[in-house]
Length: 259
Image (tube, rainbow, N blue to C red):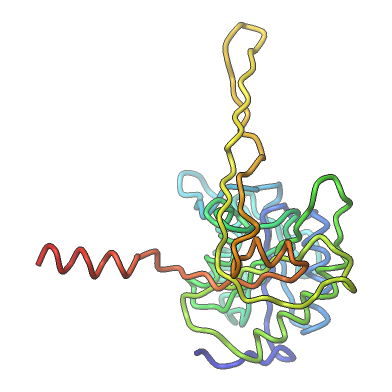
């Protein structure tokens, strides 16, 4: 395990995929400032949801200051963290990267598409402990930002005190409950839900078809030990994710078969 993080002296870099003006990043900035005075924000200038871990390599990027320690990038969450670490804060790297708080959860297969998770993954790939944070929304209920405002510092402090291995990022999801109704923190594996199960076909004014990828997901909240189960049980879901996608079981089996 890595060394614990001394939050009182930590330099914290914040990013997201909802954009620099999103309410969730403002909540996360408040949380970070309650932990450390050295807080910086570098986020996309516009919403970049579901861009995953994309990197802009075919055009130049611009970094623009929008506040005291707040900057926006005309690119992706990955671009934002990369520029934050390698350019803006190159003289003194961050000790911790926080991404979010995302409007909507990132559970199960969502992590493959999520720009929120990707920003934390970029931090981990750069050798910095990183945490993605998201707020679950059930149906049309109002977004309960107070839940993240209350529980995020608790979870961040717990993780910082423990430390965790290199090339691992933490994915945190808050349930759609008022903070006082949350029943604790559950360390959980990825559940199973797939976006895009609902495709909507429509016809444009020229008679040509076009398609909307719907938000409906087929999911199994009843599988114990998963992030989906934790959220449906009213708990904060905490899932360690690895940057190495190698499936070790298949690797060993294939190596034996092909030896």
